Length: 148
Image (cartoon, rainbow, N blue to C red; front, side, top):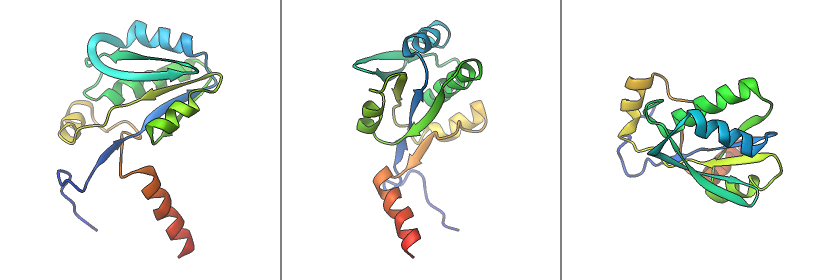
């Protein structure tokens, strides 16, 4: 076991973005804005094809931006076709969201101070809330394990 102080500068919380495929982006956005947004709240940039914009997620739904978005996506996809995937890297998300029937959500990094507050208020963190380290570093780690 290894213990680390999460507030150490070496520990970096990287956001894990969401991309939804197999959907009609306009319909998904319309439903998101209708029931899950509040002006001036948690800003989240979205990309769909050549379009992009910002939605403001309602903080009354969760202490964390990712909590609001993940709850919406779980609800939406339980009633509609489509799949969600979890993406590291801003540019990768924007590229993937150019595909037909895809919409990507660029989540902000979670502040370390939000970790315990979020767990106390909302319970367990939503899946794929954050990553510690960059995707490329993880790739080298996984490839190194295979070589070993």
